[in-house]
Length: 78
Image 1 (cartoon, rainbow, N blue to C red):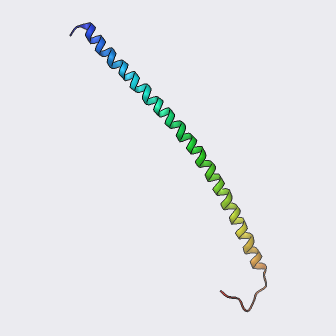
Image 2 (spheres, one colour; image 1 turned 90 degrees about the horizontal axis):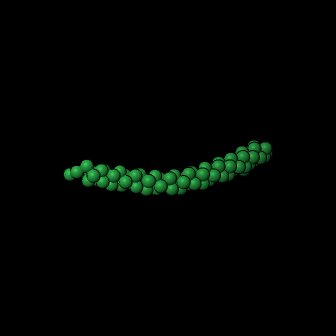
Image 3 (cartoon, rainbow, N blue to C red; image 1 turned 90 degrees about the vertical axis):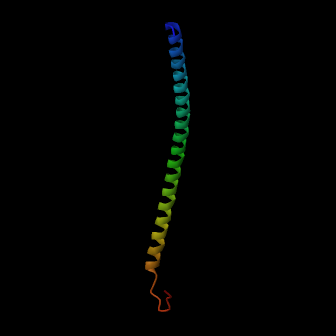
């Protein structure tokens, strides 16, 4: 095998390597964008959930405080 043939073979391998790397990076970048979008959506959903849970907790505490203020009843069922 001559020098020219070796250069062509190595050049072809190098070209394929660069193509594979480029395609892989394109795929990973697109995947990263999807993951970042999903993370943002997940964080927003978590914040909404925590806000609603906190509101429910406040309402339950408020109701418990109202119950504590009620007079004791002798006919109370447990």
